[in-house]
Image (cartoon, rainbow, N blue to C red; front, side, top):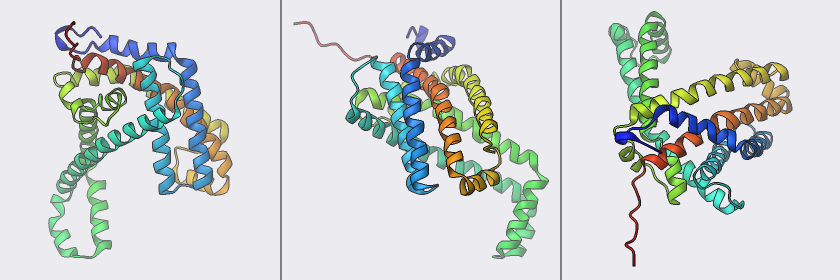
Length: 283
């Protein structure tokens, strides 16, 4: 990466992510298909349970690790043990970041609820421990102050985007260094957070729109109302095979476009921002 004055080149970074997908499309489609099939099979075997959720996230981590390894090192003989180890590292690193993000999200939620409830302090005191009354007060507070809730969601989303950009090098570093790397990413990305955000928006924003459109089309073709949680739950109960088919297509689309582009972008940024490895002195 040519990084003038230590700054991330936004459009070059986006172009490199697209270039990875264009050059490695056969590999990307293979990994996406295998991973989506494994996730759909896990749904049919386990249903919507905690083990299922853990398993599908681990499968996704393995796919991301496979993309990152290809982007960082190029083609290599398949080694399923190395894939599982890299997947476990990515899974752990992303899990640690998600835990940190959950703490930040809780803080934003706590502050937002304090602002929403402030005009209803007397009602809250009068309700005491009456859960039904407290729930009604909360509902009224949210419905009467939609602007406050919207601002809280926007601020929370912005913080999520900014903070995850500081940790954006954790996954490729974990694959490249063969160990779990989380907080080193914070140091390496110093001074480039906004440029990383811009690069992500430049390539992943359009990718997300494309994925949404294709998944919506798959939903229509298979009669799977994914936008309605109640109807989705009903479909899972009534026709799990049809939902599994939609789940496979949705996962395949997600990984083949968004997942591959994100891995290509993260790998390129990591190569440019990681510290240079000192070369041993010549004999």
